[in-house]
Image (cartoon, rainbow, N blue to C red; front, top):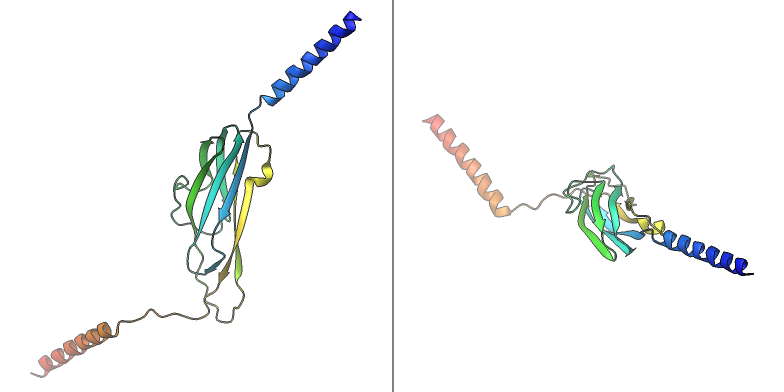
Length: 183
C-alpha cells in the first residue's frame, strides 16, 4: 500500500511540474482597431487611425503591423510607421497601446456626372507578434469608407477685383504697345 501511495504522489508531482512548465510560456493578446471617415470624395485623401494594443498578460515581442489595401498610394504616415508598411513596432508592454494617428490613403480623381452610388474603400489592418497570441480573432480589423465620385466640375472662385485689374493691365499694355507702333 505504501508503494501505491508513493506512486500517486510521484504522478501528482509530475503533473504539477508539467502544468507549471506549460503555463510558464509567455502570452500576449495583441489586438488592432482602425477608424476613419464613413464618407469621402474621390480626389481627396482619406485619413485613418490605427491603434495596436497588447492586452497581456506578458510583453509582446517583434510586433509587426500591416495594412490593406496596398493598391492606393499613401501620403506621409505618422510615426512610428513613417517608413511605411509592414511597420515593425518592436515590443509592446502588457496593457500598452501604440497609436498611429495619421495613415492617409489617396483616392484618384473620378469625375462621373451620371454616377450616383459611392464605391466602397475597405481599409484593413492586421498585427502579428513573436509572442504566442491566445486570441488571434482580434488581430485584424477593418472599416469601410463610401467614396463618392465628383458629379460636377467645380471651378475655383475668382476674385473679381483681381480679374479686372489683370485684364486692365493686359489691355493697358496692349494699348500702349499699339500707340508706340503708330508713332
